[in-house]
Structures are given as C-alpha cells and as structure tokens.
Image (cartoon, rainbow, N blue to C red; front, side, top):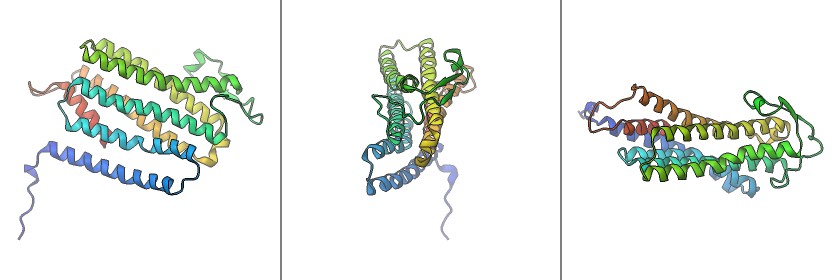
Length: 266
C-alpha cells in the first residue's frame, strides 16, 4: 500500500510559493482566454489595444509580486523598483481606460469637443471636491478638459514619484517622514484620477452603456485601491508593532513586503 504524503515535512514557505504560483497560472489562463478573443476578432484596433493593456494589468501585478516573493530578502531599492513597475503600469492603464471611453464616444482627446446632444448635462460633485468646485456644474468644453487633466495628472505624477523614490532610496535619504509625504501625494493623486473617471462615466453613462465599460473600470479601481490601501494598512501595522519580526536576522520590512506580495498574488 502506497504511503501517504507527510504534509508536516513540507516547508511552509514552499507551500506559500506554490500557492501563489497556482494563483498566477490561474490568472494567466483567464487572461489568455480574454486576449485570444480580441486577437482572433481584431476589428477595432484602437479600442482593442487599450482593452488588451487593461486585461494585462492583473497578471503583470501578480507576476511582479511573485518575483518579489521569491527574492524575499532583496534590497529596499529592489522592492521599490518592483513596486514602481506595477504603479507605472497602473498609470498607463488609467490613461488607456480614459482613451477607451473617448474612443467609444467618438470624441477627440486633443479637442475635447462636447457633442451638442449632451452639452449642458449636469455634473454633481461630492465632498471633498465641493471645497474646490461648485456642487453642480454644466458639461462643456472646459469641464470635459478639466476631467481629462484630473485623470492625466496621476499618469505624470506616478512615474515621477517612483523615479524620485528609487533615487532617494539608493542615496539612503528615503526616511519614514519622506515615505509618508510620497504616500499622501500619491493617495491624493490616484483618488482624484479615479474620481474624475467616475464622474466621466456617470456623465456619459447612457452613451457608454452599449460598450459595457463598467466591469473594466471596477476591475481597475479594485486592483488600484486594494493594492494601495493594503500597503498603507501594512505600514501602519508595522509602525504600531502588530507586525514584527520574531528573529534578529529577519528585518520586519521583509515581512511587510512578503505579506504585500502574497496578498497581490492571491
């Protein structure tokens, strides 16, 4: 009779890595299915290129996080470089999603010309945007351009911040106060970008409905906010001592990065 496998002898670290690898393979399977549907029916190149970039967001996040998990005790600069890959791709995805909605609406991104049939629609802002904008504004050339700028500011700020953070880390000037300054800046930036996308979608909801962009937007929003806020929560848990190292040879930052990468993979 064949002996049963003794699971107690398996290294917990190996179980984590194998579990993450399985999740990535599952993600790749569904990604390839979606990509094949677009590649085999290549009818609208401009729109489908943007959709492909959006589809690749989840597996790219997972693969980059898996690399960080394998090199568990890498340098701070290495971890920051991996994070920068994900976050810069995130900025690209947001830009492409906005371009996709413009394409669906047949509006030029450079001209921002509002079709006469929808000009004058009301845009209702919520707090805290009402501190800087009237609660209700009318859709026109100016407001449409403003929504585009609110989205694109993140596309610019995110790579610039990533580059500065890597340079400061290499120079060993990346202290905790500086880290929190970047966190606040990026939090405001990504929140404004996603807010403007929500407003844009609601204004053109009737025209966009046949194209079903809501699922794509919820996917982007879910990944962006989940990854961003889980990172913030982990930093807080480390700061207050809830997450801490039990070994002198293992720095708590490795544990924090490991948990972050594990959650993204799963």
